[in-house]
Length: 155
Image 1: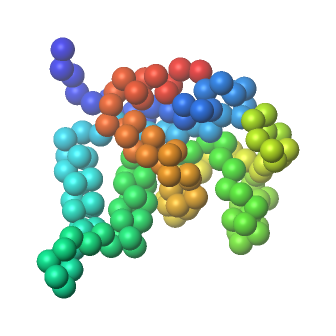
Image 2: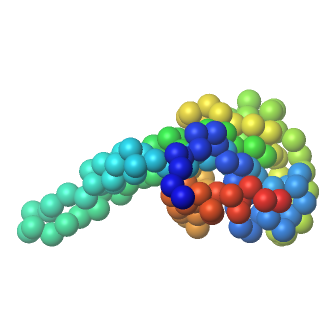
Image 3: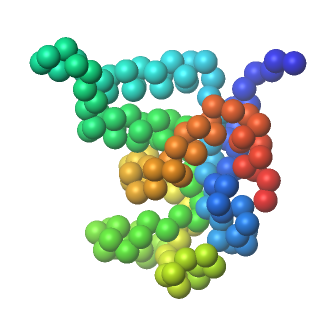
């Protein structure tokens, strides 16, 4: 049975976070894409490909990076419990002041600084830039599929 897309965001957990204790999981509040959202996505990424001098298709990496950030900002409304990393905190010490130190269970590093909640658009763009490609792709792909978002809501 077809139904309208839920407009409230899903609290999505990355697949590799699901086995961690709840306080160590990063949550992404993701909206399910509608047909209109899909068209916006297509438009963003269509602009990243140009025709070069010899008629070959070329990817503009800067425009592709911008499309990724815009897509993330459009679909993700909030990120909870995110570690921006030491370099980011050095550049933006005010963010480090908002963060809480926690231990990692699954990494060589013993501790990280986790920001409780990120909703500011420029900081969401920073998260999109800082995420490993695998995680960014998982989040953007999850927004296409209600069942994936629902699975990601489960603890």
